[in-house]
Length: 309
Image 1: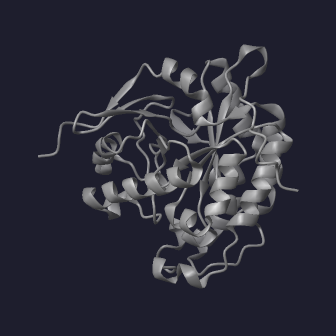
Image 2 (image 1 turned 135 degrees about the vertical axis):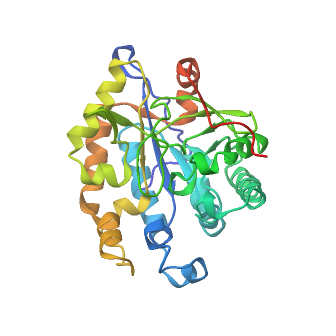
Protein backbone atom coordinates (compact mmCIF):
# COMPACT_ATOMS: atom_id res chain seq x y z
CA UNK A 1 0.00 0.00 0.00
CA UNK A 2 1.45 3.36 -1.05
CA UNK A 3 1.40 6.29 1.38
CA UNK A 4 -1.29 8.85 0.69
CA UNK A 5 0.50 11.69 -1.13
CA UNK A 6 -2.14 14.12 0.11
CA UNK A 7 -0.96 13.63 3.69
CA UNK A 8 2.40 15.39 4.19
CA UNK A 9 4.89 13.84 6.57
CA UNK A 10 4.93 15.49 9.99
CA UNK A 11 7.98 17.53 11.02
CA UNK A 12 10.13 15.48 13.33
CA UNK A 13 10.70 16.44 16.95
CA UNK A 14 13.10 14.38 18.99
CA UNK A 15 11.84 13.22 22.42
CA UNK A 16 13.16 14.99 25.53
CA UNK A 17 14.31 17.95 23.47
CA UNK A 18 17.09 16.09 21.68
CA UNK A 19 17.74 17.06 18.04
CA UNK A 20 16.22 15.00 15.28
CA UNK A 21 18.56 13.32 12.84
CA UNK A 22 18.49 13.54 9.05
CA UNK A 23 17.66 10.63 6.76
CA UNK A 24 18.52 10.85 3.06
CA UNK A 25 18.34 8.71 -0.06
CA UNK A 26 20.42 9.00 -3.23
CA UNK A 27 17.85 8.15 -5.90
CA UNK A 28 19.69 6.27 -8.65
CA UNK A 29 19.30 2.93 -10.42
CA UNK A 30 21.31 -0.13 -9.36
CA UNK A 31 23.20 -0.10 -12.67
CA UNK A 32 24.39 3.51 -12.23
CA UNK A 33 26.72 2.87 -9.29
CA UNK A 34 30.35 3.90 -9.56
CA UNK A 35 31.45 0.33 -8.80
CA UNK A 36 30.06 -0.70 -12.19
CA UNK A 37 31.23 2.36 -14.14
CA UNK A 38 34.07 0.48 -15.80
CA UNK A 39 31.79 -2.16 -17.31
CA UNK A 40 28.33 -0.54 -17.51
CA UNK A 41 28.55 2.64 -19.57
CA UNK A 42 25.84 5.37 -19.59
CA UNK A 43 24.94 4.60 -23.21
CA UNK A 44 24.04 1.07 -22.07
CA UNK A 45 21.78 2.14 -19.19
CA UNK A 46 18.54 1.97 -21.25
CA UNK A 47 19.25 -1.73 -21.87
CA UNK A 48 18.80 -2.57 -18.17
CA UNK A 49 15.47 -3.21 -16.48
CA UNK A 50 14.41 -0.36 -14.23
CA UNK A 51 13.77 -1.25 -10.58
CA UNK A 52 13.78 2.20 -8.99
CA UNK A 53 10.04 2.71 -8.53
CA UNK A 54 9.36 -0.45 -6.54
CA UNK A 55 12.29 0.34 -4.23
CA UNK A 56 11.22 3.96 -3.71
CA UNK A 57 7.63 2.91 -3.01
CA UNK A 58 8.91 0.49 -0.35
CA UNK A 59 10.88 3.34 1.23
CA UNK A 60 7.82 5.62 1.21
CA UNK A 61 5.80 2.93 2.96
CA UNK A 62 8.48 2.43 5.62
CA UNK A 63 8.72 6.17 6.26
CA UNK A 64 4.94 6.52 6.51
CA UNK A 65 4.76 3.63 8.97
CA UNK A 66 7.32 5.34 11.23
CA UNK A 67 6.01 8.91 10.76
CA UNK A 68 9.40 9.92 9.42
CA UNK A 69 10.45 12.11 6.54
CA UNK A 70 13.62 12.34 4.49
CA UNK A 71 15.54 14.16 1.80
CA UNK A 72 15.70 12.45 -1.59
CA UNK A 73 18.76 13.45 -3.66
CA UNK A 74 17.38 12.63 -7.10
CA UNK A 75 19.42 11.94 -10.21
CA UNK A 76 18.22 13.94 -13.20
CA UNK A 77 18.52 10.92 -15.51
CA UNK A 78 16.06 9.07 -13.27
CA UNK A 79 13.76 12.07 -12.84
CA UNK A 80 13.34 12.46 -16.61
CA UNK A 81 12.12 8.87 -16.87
CA UNK A 82 10.16 8.66 -13.63
CA UNK A 83 8.65 12.11 -13.20
CA UNK A 84 5.51 10.80 -11.49
CA UNK A 85 7.70 9.08 -8.90
CA UNK A 86 9.40 12.39 -8.09
CA UNK A 87 5.98 14.01 -7.71
CA UNK A 88 4.92 11.14 -5.46
CA UNK A 89 7.94 11.64 -3.19
CA UNK A 90 7.34 15.38 -2.95
CA UNK A 91 3.60 14.86 -2.46
CA UNK A 92 4.28 12.66 0.56
CA UNK A 93 5.99 15.62 2.25
CA UNK A 94 9.63 14.71 1.62
CA UNK A 95 12.34 17.08 0.42
CA UNK A 96 13.60 16.84 -3.16
CA UNK A 97 17.27 17.70 -3.66
CA UNK A 98 19.76 17.25 -6.50
CA UNK A 99 22.15 14.36 -7.16
CA UNK A 100 23.27 15.82 -10.49
CA UNK A 101 22.17 14.56 -13.89
CA UNK A 102 24.19 11.54 -14.99
CA UNK A 103 25.94 10.17 -11.89
CA UNK A 104 29.33 11.27 -13.13
CA UNK A 105 31.97 11.98 -10.49
CA UNK A 106 32.91 15.67 -10.41
CA UNK A 107 36.58 14.94 -11.10
CA UNK A 108 35.47 13.64 -14.52
CA UNK A 109 33.80 16.97 -15.41
CA UNK A 110 35.00 20.43 -16.28
CA UNK A 111 33.66 23.38 -14.26
CA UNK A 112 31.47 24.32 -17.23
CA UNK A 113 30.02 20.82 -17.54
CA UNK A 114 29.35 20.75 -13.80
CA UNK A 115 27.62 24.14 -13.88
CA UNK A 116 25.39 22.95 -16.73
CA UNK A 117 24.50 19.77 -14.78
CA UNK A 118 23.61 21.80 -11.71
CA UNK A 119 21.34 24.13 -13.66
CA UNK A 120 19.64 21.31 -15.60
CA UNK A 121 18.99 19.12 -12.55
CA UNK A 122 17.77 22.01 -10.42
CA UNK A 123 15.24 23.18 -13.02
CA UNK A 124 14.02 19.66 -13.78
CA UNK A 125 13.47 18.77 -10.13
CA UNK A 126 11.84 22.10 -9.30
CA UNK A 127 9.44 21.70 -12.23
CA UNK A 128 8.47 18.21 -11.06
CA UNK A 129 8.24 18.89 -7.33
CA UNK A 130 6.86 22.45 -7.60
CA UNK A 131 9.23 23.41 -4.78
CA UNK A 132 12.65 25.08 -4.57
CA UNK A 133 15.59 22.68 -4.76
CA UNK A 134 18.34 24.01 -2.48
CA UNK A 135 20.34 20.89 -1.53
CA UNK A 136 22.97 18.90 -3.42
CA UNK A 137 24.94 15.72 -2.98
CA UNK A 138 27.67 14.79 -5.46
CA UNK A 139 27.76 11.29 -6.96
CA UNK A 140 30.17 9.15 -4.93
CA UNK A 141 30.82 12.07 -2.52
CA UNK A 142 33.19 13.44 -5.16
CA UNK A 143 33.74 16.92 -3.74
CA UNK A 144 37.31 16.59 -2.51
CA UNK A 145 40.31 18.91 -2.33
CA UNK A 146 40.92 18.30 -6.05
CA UNK A 147 37.38 19.35 -6.93
CA UNK A 148 36.94 22.10 -4.34
CA UNK A 149 36.03 24.52 -7.16
CA UNK A 150 32.64 22.78 -7.13
CA UNK A 151 31.81 24.56 -3.85
CA UNK A 152 31.94 27.92 -5.61
CA UNK A 153 29.83 26.50 -8.46
CA UNK A 154 27.13 25.30 -6.03
CA UNK A 155 26.79 28.75 -4.50
CA UNK A 156 26.67 30.38 -7.95
CA UNK A 157 23.89 27.94 -8.95
CA UNK A 158 21.73 28.94 -5.98
CA UNK A 159 22.19 25.92 -3.72
CA UNK A 160 22.05 26.58 0.02
CA UNK A 161 23.57 23.40 1.42
CA UNK A 162 25.71 20.48 0.35
CA UNK A 163 26.23 16.96 1.70
CA UNK A 164 29.14 15.77 -0.45
CA UNK A 165 32.25 16.09 1.72
CA UNK A 166 32.85 12.86 3.64
CA UNK A 167 35.44 13.42 6.43
CA UNK A 168 37.12 10.02 5.99
CA UNK A 169 39.90 8.28 4.08
CA UNK A 170 38.64 6.25 1.13
CA UNK A 171 40.05 5.05 -2.16
CA UNK A 172 37.52 7.07 -4.18
CA UNK A 173 36.60 10.08 -2.06
CA UNK A 174 36.97 11.82 1.30
CA UNK A 175 38.49 14.87 3.00
CA UNK A 176 39.89 13.37 6.23
CA UNK A 177 40.57 16.70 7.96
CA UNK A 178 37.14 18.22 7.24
CA UNK A 179 34.85 18.79 10.26
CA UNK A 180 32.59 15.88 11.21
CA UNK A 181 29.52 18.06 11.76
CA UNK A 182 27.68 20.80 9.91
CA UNK A 183 30.09 23.59 9.01
CA UNK A 184 30.79 26.25 6.39
CA UNK A 185 32.84 24.95 3.47
CA UNK A 186 34.74 27.74 1.72
CA UNK A 187 35.70 27.19 -1.89
CA UNK A 188 38.92 28.39 -3.54
CA UNK A 189 36.98 31.34 -4.96
CA UNK A 190 35.90 32.45 -1.48
CA UNK A 191 32.24 31.46 -1.68
CA UNK A 192 30.88 29.39 1.20
CA UNK A 193 28.08 26.90 1.61
CA UNK A 194 26.63 24.98 4.53
CA UNK A 195 28.31 21.57 4.40
CA UNK A 196 26.54 18.70 6.20
CA UNK A 197 28.61 15.49 6.22
CA UNK A 198 27.32 11.95 6.71
CA UNK A 199 27.63 10.52 10.21
CA UNK A 200 31.02 9.35 11.46
CA UNK A 201 32.18 7.89 14.75
CA UNK A 202 35.53 8.89 16.22
CA UNK A 203 37.58 5.77 17.01
CA UNK A 204 41.30 4.97 17.24
CA UNK A 205 42.26 8.50 16.21
CA UNK A 206 40.27 8.39 12.95
CA UNK A 207 36.76 8.99 11.65
CA UNK A 208 34.87 5.72 11.19
CA UNK A 209 32.12 6.04 8.54
CA UNK A 210 28.84 4.81 10.01
CA UNK A 211 26.40 7.09 8.16
CA UNK A 212 24.83 4.61 5.82
CA UNK A 213 25.24 2.99 2.44
CA UNK A 214 27.64 0.07 2.40
CA UNK A 215 28.74 0.96 5.93
CA UNK A 216 25.24 0.44 7.28
CA UNK A 217 24.99 -2.85 5.39
CA UNK A 218 28.39 -4.10 6.54
CA UNK A 219 28.53 -2.91 10.16
CA UNK A 220 26.31 -4.17 13.00
CA UNK A 221 23.40 -1.77 13.31
CA UNK A 222 24.43 -1.19 16.93
CA UNK A 223 27.54 0.65 15.69
CA UNK A 224 25.38 3.05 13.67
CA UNK A 225 23.12 3.46 16.70
CA UNK A 226 26.19 4.28 18.80
CA UNK A 227 27.09 7.01 16.30
CA UNK A 228 23.61 8.52 16.50
CA UNK A 229 23.63 8.38 20.30
CA UNK A 230 27.03 10.07 20.35
CA UNK A 231 25.68 12.85 18.12
CA UNK A 232 22.74 13.33 20.47
CA UNK A 233 25.00 13.64 23.50
CA UNK A 234 26.92 16.37 21.67
CA UNK A 235 23.70 18.13 20.65
CA UNK A 236 24.45 17.38 16.99
CA UNK A 237 22.40 16.14 14.06
CA UNK A 238 23.52 12.85 12.53
CA UNK A 239 23.09 12.28 8.80
CA UNK A 240 22.22 8.81 7.47
CA UNK A 241 22.15 8.02 3.75
CA UNK A 242 20.97 5.06 1.67
CA UNK A 243 20.17 4.20 -1.94
CA UNK A 244 16.87 2.66 -3.06
CA UNK A 245 18.75 -0.24 -4.71
CA UNK A 246 20.09 -1.15 -1.26
CA UNK A 247 16.58 -2.32 -0.35
CA UNK A 248 16.43 -4.56 -3.44
CA UNK A 249 18.29 -7.85 -2.83
CA UNK A 250 16.74 -9.41 -5.97
CA UNK A 251 18.35 -6.94 -8.38
CA UNK A 252 20.32 -8.46 -11.30
CA UNK A 253 24.01 -9.18 -10.81
CA UNK A 254 26.12 -6.64 -12.71
CA UNK A 255 29.40 -7.30 -14.53
CA UNK A 256 32.07 -5.92 -12.18
CA UNK A 257 35.16 -7.02 -10.29
CA UNK A 258 34.82 -9.45 -7.41
CA UNK A 259 35.62 -6.72 -4.86
CA UNK A 260 33.19 -4.25 -6.42
CA UNK A 261 30.45 -6.89 -6.56
CA UNK A 262 30.98 -7.66 -2.89
CA UNK A 263 30.87 -3.95 -2.00
CA UNK A 264 27.68 -3.51 -3.98
CA UNK A 265 25.76 -6.58 -2.79
CA UNK A 266 26.92 -7.28 0.75
CA UNK A 267 23.94 -7.68 3.11
CA UNK A 268 21.34 -6.20 0.75
CA UNK A 269 18.78 -8.48 2.36
CA UNK A 270 19.34 -6.79 5.74
CA UNK A 271 19.03 -3.13 4.73
CA UNK A 272 15.28 -2.71 5.22
CA UNK A 273 15.38 -4.42 8.63
CA UNK A 274 18.25 -2.20 9.80
CA UNK A 275 16.51 0.93 8.54
CA UNK A 276 13.30 0.04 10.38
CA UNK A 277 15.30 -0.69 13.54
CA UNK A 278 16.88 2.78 13.45
CA UNK A 279 13.56 4.46 12.66
CA UNK A 280 12.00 2.77 15.68
CA UNK A 281 14.66 4.20 18.01
CA UNK A 282 15.39 7.67 16.61
CA UNK A 283 13.41 10.50 15.06
CA UNK A 284 14.43 11.38 11.52
CA UNK A 285 13.56 14.28 9.26
CA UNK A 286 14.80 16.00 6.13
CA UNK A 287 17.63 18.49 5.82
CA UNK A 288 15.00 21.16 5.30
CA UNK A 289 13.31 20.32 8.60
CA UNK A 290 16.62 20.25 10.48
CA UNK A 291 17.96 23.43 8.88
CA UNK A 292 17.51 25.78 11.85
CA UNK A 293 19.41 23.41 14.12
CA UNK A 294 22.10 22.80 11.50
CA UNK A 295 22.62 26.50 10.88
CA UNK A 296 22.83 27.35 14.57
CA UNK A 297 25.43 24.64 15.19
CA UNK A 298 27.58 25.39 12.12
CA UNK A 299 30.23 27.51 13.83
CA UNK A 300 33.28 25.91 12.18
CA UNK A 301 34.68 26.89 8.80
CA UNK A 302 36.75 24.72 6.48
CA UNK A 303 38.74 26.43 3.74
CA UNK A 304 39.82 24.59 0.62
CA UNK A 305 42.66 26.94 -0.22
CA UNK A 306 43.30 30.11 -2.27
CA UNK A 307 41.65 30.76 -5.64
CA UNK A 308 42.97 28.65 -8.50
CA UNK A 309 45.06 30.77 -10.89
